[in-house]
Length: 574
Ligand SMILES: [Zn+2]
Image 1 (cartoon, rainbow, N blue to C red):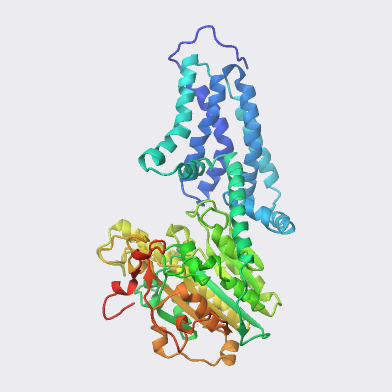
Image 2: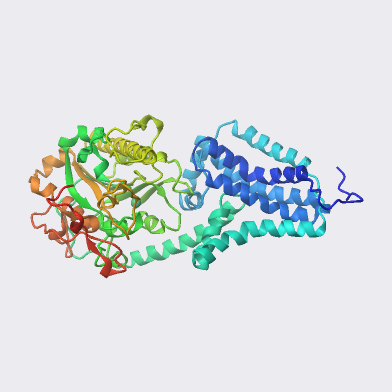
């Protein structure tokens, strides 16, 4: 094809179809994978749009140097093609989007395991598919022709593209929202990430950053002295202890707690085997912040103790348990570094969620297989943490279509608009699916016929138009409502466990008002551990239990903490 500049260039007539082909070529490398992700319904529209947007960038060099268009396009194309093979290959194998969590898993997990995984999922059609994909790119390249613009036109257009991609997105957070430069940069990176090669480059630099943070947290944890005078009433005896951490599940949406819709039929069916605690509340409405207290000695009045006192994972190790962490939450996002640090305090981790965005389709049943695998492990004393995605927003991504049982208005407040009804139905369907996952874990544990115990509760609740006025959706620490903190809390014991620990609880115990910020004492009490700092008055099941204020709010502003009990209707209800 000739690239010689025509003798006369009418300055207004832009070769739109030439521009179109050029754009299509650059878009192809990010767009195909994003298009496939769209078709499988795995992600929302945002990454697709961003990938399309970011692909405009590559138009700049050929517009500025039209004479070299095909060479420039070929060079950029090869680089983009190379990086795109990772995301496309990853999609073929996992049907998921590439993210820094994947980089983390590749570098941090056992290499043999990773290659086994690839071998397990590799199918013959992937090779011809990759070849066809590459041939498509080569063909598009043959369609590329220089787009001649007057020098000034080319400069203006390029400047517009760059401003559109990099200046405008910074303008909003910096000028309008007044965010810090770092925050603005993070937002920009987030926008760039869906496109090649940024997902690899940004993903890798974020992974390095988070790894450093995690290492220093882990090193700090390793320096914490062990508990003094730890005594274990079941020392040396086989035991399998399971802690299931739910996500964003408000007990007021569970039929187990009296919700009119049958959202927890499985747990309802096993109610006689469960201790169902009716008045347990989370201290904070956010995962990381709440688990920093739930899994450690920290609480609303001593929020930093997680840095200086042993965690639940440390304690169980000290007591001689082999410990496991199965998670369907994202591992390597900046937000989740603390979570991943907690997981690394166990002996073995199963990271099952690779998604870049929390608004991705990702079902909790993936935890069942590794759970079964651990139950089969002959290790006599096991401590297993299962961290679910539960009923986290977006609710519609939390359950497969077989669980789409609630669709009408039945059982919902009349005041809800039709949009609110749709959201509530999605939430209730997610609760229904969560019921399947939690009850499956209990069934599997029961079938293993071990001396075992399982505790399930949600990290925090969620207001799904429940509070007065039916207008609040989600969670907010500044405007707390009861549903944001009202969580399910259940304990299941195996027959073997009950035979060894014939303990009954009077009704009064199940009605105690309790904050999970003191959970470490309840857990220790349940599994028979005592140590110098053990405080029976903070154990939900102890005879010496003392009701305390249910403090919520940010402990960084102690003056703002409020007692949830002041928001409860009298006489106390759920
Ligand atoms: Zn959460």
